[in-house]
Image 1 (tube, rainbow, N blue to C red):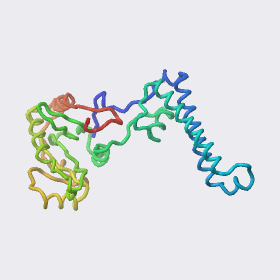
Image 2: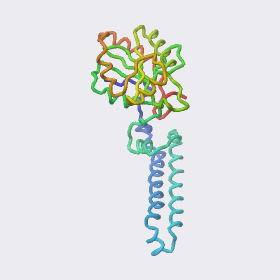
Image 3: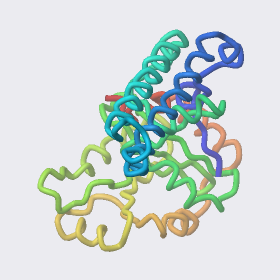
Image 4: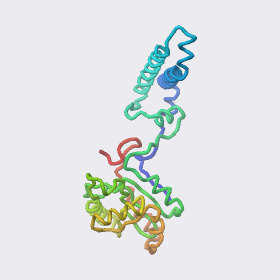
Length: 261
C-alpha cells in the first residue's frame, strides 16, 4: 500500500545543503556540543560528588553550577543559530535536534495521528491501494483523518484515540458520518465510514454506550475487513478517485498539529 502525501505534508530536512555550509549552522552545531558538554558536567558532578569534594577545592554543587552555565551558553548559541537559519525553536526536542545535526528528514509523531500505525498494519496490501490523510471534503467542517482507496472501494477511517468511558468523551461518529457523506458526494462513488478501535475491549465499551451508526473494526482486523469487500474499481477508477482525494488533502507540515488547530 502506498502512502500519498502532498507537498505540505511530506517530511523535509530542516536545513538545506546550502545552509549547512553557513556560519549559522556551525554556530548551531557548536551550541549543541557545548550544551551536551555542560549537561555532562552537571550530571557527572553529581555522580562523582564524593570524589570532587575530596580531591578538589570545589564542592560538587559549584561544579554543577558551572555545568549549568555552560549548558545555558550552548542553548543560547543553538537559538541564535536556529533563528538565523529560520528554524523554529518551538517544540524543540532531542529528535528535532538529531535530525538537524544528522541531516535527516523531520517527521515527528503527532498527537491524534495514527497514520503510521495503520500503514504498518496494512503493509501487506498491494500498491493498488493507497492511504491519504487529512482529507477535508468540500462543505465539511470536519477533517477525515485517513482515507483508503483501492480496488475494493473507498474507506474513510476514524481511529478512536480517546477512551469512551472518559467523562469528557464526545462521540465523533455523527460528525464523522456527515463528513463521509460529503466526501461521497465529492467523489461521486460510495464511501464506507469506519470507526477503528485499538482493541476489542474498547470497541465493546463503545458499543454499549453509543448507538452504532456505521461499521466498527479493530485495528488488527482492518486488513481482513477491507479484503473481504468485493472488488468494485478497475485501475482507471482507482486512479480517478485518487486524483480527487489528493485535491481534498488539507495538510499540515510535520511537527504541527495534525488537526490544523
